[in-house]
Image 1 (tube, rainbow, N blue to C red):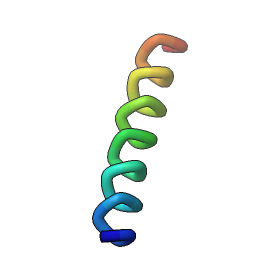
Image 2 (cartoon, rainbow, N blue to C red):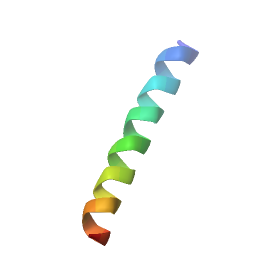
Image 3 (tube, rainbow, N blue to C red):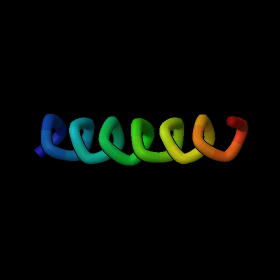
Length: 25
């Protein structure tokens, strides 16, 4: 379960960073 949660958080983190990059550019 811990692994799944970690993966989910990682995905969300990646999406947020990606959107932030697009917004910055």
